[in-house]
Image 1 (tube, rainbow, N blue to C red):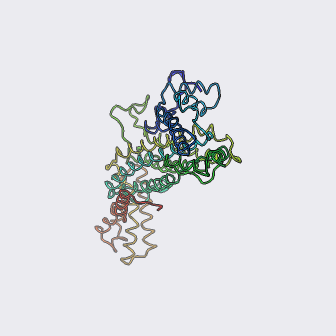
Image 2 (image 1 turned 90 degrees about the vertical axis):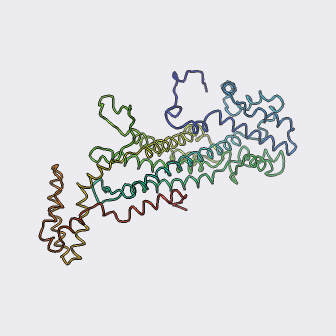
Length: 469
């Protein structure tokens, strides 16, 4: 491992600067990982001091230097690693060079994964907490939009064809409901995150039993870390835990993917009802100055597609952790676990910006209602005609013929003639007067209880409602 090249002269991950935020990058940084390793070594030394194994001075020396993880100390550890080819032992030696009194007892009784896996569990907790907090902010922002547009009628689409009216708020409530399910899944994962504990090379705790009574070291160290451990483990904690967590992140990505894809459809000029925020100096295309491409929604879908692939890697890691352990998981976990969280963090952050700045074009919504709404409202007219004594099949055929003619006119670019045609047909007006028929054909009133359901979902979201609880 080397770190001598300029950041602009050597490969850097897009997550280093472009995607995710500083807080999530800090959790998965090299420095924070080593700080957690040292925190665990200090807790181990303190537990061993309580058991009379190491001196107070040795434990205090480790504690005094635990925060001294700097660029220089990391460079020293990397220098050692280049010689010994073991990253954790290289950090042990770099740490020991700082601790003239306690350096000799660092890592006593432990195996590498007693340190690394417990540190990873602590990082998983921190990262899930950050995602949940960001997701909650997104949920609240979305609930505001749901409530704002709960009663605004808009055409719904099934099979990407105009169907019946819904409301903008009710459509947004579908995304809100999905995100509440994701929040539930993440909270469940967070509650279940556990470390390996301190069980040694194959999980039998043999090395620790040589130091004291059964479980004494593990209990004392875990209490200091405020961490629960799996009751049994091999050299590692069960890799199924990674799969559970990353799967929950992929579920969140799935929800945001759908929202972003729907936004892209609705932003296309033929529909033109929604749009993501677009800056006053933003450039949409290098060749076409007029373009207002939905680049943020497209980024969400691109990154979400990547995150959707990662549970499979975690699945393989769990399934291929043969007997008490292999290294099938080790190299890819340095990339995948961190990038799952970095991707999820970017997805939530970008989605929040879109939701807060979402542009709803009410004029275009009303235009689409005028064009397509009358077709949907014919169902109301049909029911009213039958109630007035008409033959249902005869009225259905009458409305069908008028609808086909109107659809041909709309397809040719003309205004929708359906309402006038129906209201002037004697076969209809002999049962219902033209004024009443025109009122029935106003599709904006044909949204059922969508406004009330949307407002209720917004209220539930703000009150911490759990979909799956």
